[in-house]
Image (tube, rainbow, N blue to C red; front, side, top):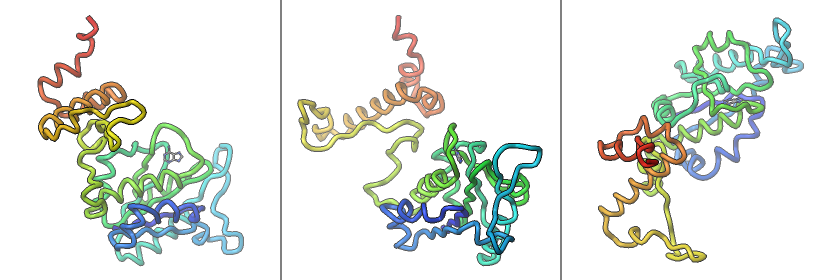
Length: 246
Ligand code: ADE
């Protein structure tokens, strides 16, 4: 996969997307990430201006459509095909694990980072951009959201995670949160690791992990339990907590 990120602050990206698992994937050539300075595509050659006041008297400044459009057009010509275009925005659909998996299927992704009051709506229409939010709160710009999206998508690419980092057991993959995990020492500050995990009894360990995943999901994200695949017995136990109150 190749990702191209258009931003006013390309210098923010290398540390985050050049380190650890994503950095390793890039070095191995599984993934290419290119960050572009939006000002380089400004039609205003002298001042490299990319923003303007909002029509209708809104407050603040809005990013104009043309600098992004020039960047996307140049990239499209270079690639020889139209990439899928994402725009980071608190107005978008909220990023989820299934969305990250879907986006990982694209060969080319473009991520547009807004700043100030956002971007001219016509840009999003012209390029059929998919608006993506990372959650119900507002940040100062799309750069941190773009890094989060790039990280979440990268680790879904085939071969990016080593076997021991595999994502099939972790939170959200199965629709449940992940069960708690422990390492040496067996007793730490008087707290024992659950003995079942040291028993070597594979079936009991699996059963315990499933129970714990259900318990933590019920406690922290009961909304996820309603959508998760549960056995009849699990539904009875975890979806009807009011029964336990009486
Ligand atoms: N830009 C500002 N806030 C954002 C958010 N929550 N998600 C995506 N992009 C944003």
